[in-house]
Length: 108
Length: 136
Image (cartoon, rainbow over the protein chains, first blue to last red):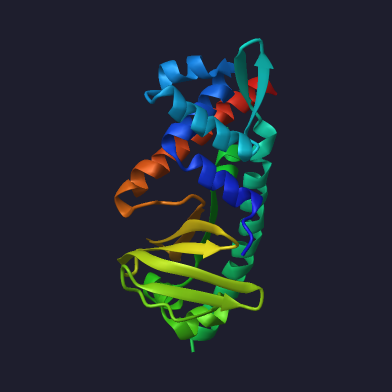
């Protein structure tokens, strides 16, 4: 099956280091790779790689300023996670209804 | 305060039912009963066991993670390209059973990492929640 937007987000954020980088961008605003590396506990190439994956998932955007690249979080990209949750809630609510009907029939 | 965080992180449906846990457990674990309210399946309540659910709209693949008869049942749920974990909890009440279903959408790469990963998500979303409250 084709990957869904929420699937890509979950997979992207499932990595704790990557999630920490994204979280930091959400919390502290724009950051350079250097500033992120100083706190990430992994090498700069590793941070750059995580940023590339985040960018591909639409979770961060980059902005070039002189020789520096600044990264920032795109919170609107998290919308499919909320959509997924409301779709699944409707699915399970209707299955709970079915389950209650079945339990009534099982009394006999 | 945590409403939006919960909505994003997991799907939880909870209902009190006027039936004993043993009876609800049967409906959750016996294939011919599961077929009546959820989907056709070859499910068996044995940890590590793979199974599939099928419906007109597609199929769900899963693997049983935890079985504690009449109390807890959890399994992976892979559908539409998303692997999540379903956890059923049955709590006896004066009038029957409180049945709770929690679906958490992330990939537990290994069982050992499961709890750590789950807490990581919880912290992530509660931080995010706090941030969204400040910025709106």
